[in-house]
Image 1 (cartoon, rainbow, N blue to C red):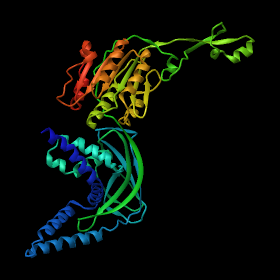
Image 2 (cartoon, one colour; image 1 turned 30 degrees about the horizontal axis):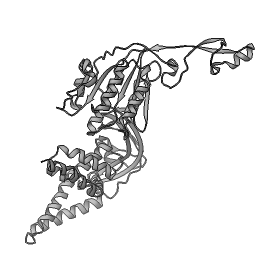
Image 3 (cartoon, rainbow, N blue to C red; image 1 turned 135 degrees about the vertical axis):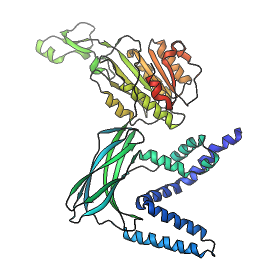
Image 4 (tube, rainbow, N blue to C red; image 1 turned 90 degrees about the vertical axis):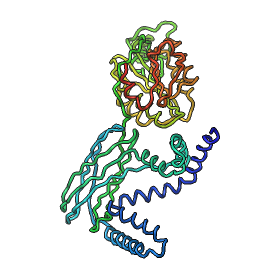
Length: 460
């Protein structure tokens, strides 16, 4: 059995590698046919295909008649739907942002630039999606095939469709526009369901009308490229009580989001032996004729860190759940006198701060909407956290596993007197038996499956 399990990823990867170029062409043809054929047209098309298969029996003359009839109907419909004689101007009114998993509507304004009436129109939206690289599809298929049966593993195209649906990012329903008189303007409402966070690329608006047989649509396309940012899905969070004292913040509020040693400016005073030449106020020295230095006061306030693990080793659903968890924590109500540092790693370590006028929660949400998995090492995040540990009062860790590097980081932060809440995102049914350095604070050690994220966040 172990050998059989070992062969499955290899076979799945081989199918994905060989089939990716063909899958891309099949998907492109399938999308074009879905836009062109009506439900009645699909019925005639499948009848044509069935007749072609059964037509291998040369004694079945009725099958040849059915085949010829279907082929003739489709040929006439194709000729009748060759082009839609329309001259129009189209524009969208998209919202500022959307949220993954939450349906929204937007308006499309259509102006008929011609003198002739346009009747029985429908309008459809097409979103752009980059074609997956072969290596990306191989990783996706191998990951998705882990829980599927042998037949599903052998069929690679459904996984290509699933990946393309994810990369497109949303589903937009076709809408009826009705009749549009000449030189008139009409507004249609389209409904969009974002399937993921990140950027949606709206590309082409298509006007269509059924040809007289009702088998195909005549199409008129108008490219209107626009983008829309989709925020991560969030859930209500029960209050988190992290004990922690106020800490010295070098530079005060003005420098809280930066690296430096300048404090909050208070006043000027005469130079004393040992003062740094960097603090000399040269203009005041020129006016008074004696050396004068700038005097500063230190500031102390509460500062929490939110450490986001961007080093997934499992399925993409776990990474998305971690992003959603972090986004929910960012929106959690906080004291107006405290700061929150969001720390994560992509190509390098990032620390972004909100609170006390240094940024709003929506700013961090926009960042989380576009965070991607890092190809680096977890130690990069650990180093950034320890570098800032001296000014951190407490921290919230969102981890994708509970291995030695992550346990070591938690142990070192707790050893510095920093209170922590640790979240571990795992598969459903999987448990973390050893809380390690969090054994003495089990209430702040949480293990959550993606499907139960909302319920776990609401638990005190």
